Image 1 (cartoon, rainbow, N blue to C red):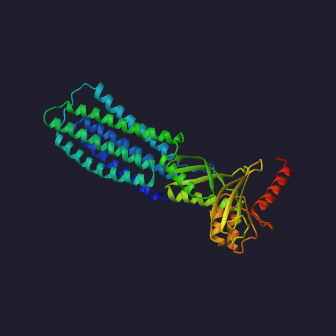
Image 2: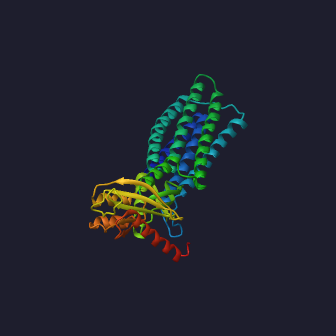
Image 3: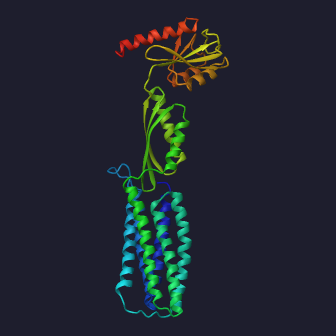
Length: 398
């Protein structure tokens, strides 16, 4: 899967960083006896376990067994939720130690602890910033979640540093207070990760920005008459999109080609889309829309000699309503393009266009070319309406 190796490298880097920091903090927490540093060691250890789960989740999410045709992408979100529980546990352990242990702790060599915290702050600041950017670029909730709790580690280290400086100045209880504040940072980070993971597992919608982009792509296509539904959901790093649209009356092959083109455009415009499902329906014909090629004086012409296209709506009561008149050059291709954009069902003309490309364009737009021997506008219209009425009667619609 695209970007899979890059995700795995970032998670592996996070794992190694947390392993190093966990051991470093634990060793110096034992040496110095700092509760705040012990809290930090627990925090980093929980990050280490979380990174291991993240790595497993990212690897498994790339699998697509037959039993799971939509992929195992949500394993990324599940692992993110598991990470949040590790953070909740770390926060609980720290609060329990602060509240229920009343023994005064003696901190030895606090300068060693300060040095350790400074090293941890530098490493976590740099790594969390770069990992978050990578997670956003790759649209990976696991990487973003991992970067968030590494950033929480940096913030909590800042509090620990303040506490240790207080101890060096003779305020021994500051270490406990620092540990309690660290636990709140951890708790908040866990809540945010848990919330985002649950939203995806419950099929939260695509962002409004993505939906607007999809609307814009669909609206630009001249064959799309109406957008009925756009909905989508997340699964891990990937998005699934479902769309219902009304298309102009086209042949099956042409409609399928247009839908494929729309799906491809959406995938190109929006990152990390796994699939786009488009359900399309033909526009339900209400009455009849006819285009008549004329010379501008109600005389019927063909594609190479017409100067005007008259668009007419024939309602079910057979009354005629002129919608618009379009001036055109007596050029087959121009007339063909205008007709294909006007949602007409029939074009009345003296002859079919001679240019094969124009014929194909008209056919692709689902327009019936009606050749007539009549010369006058109204007589030609009447000819078509009578034939249409006869057809409706045979179909039992009137």
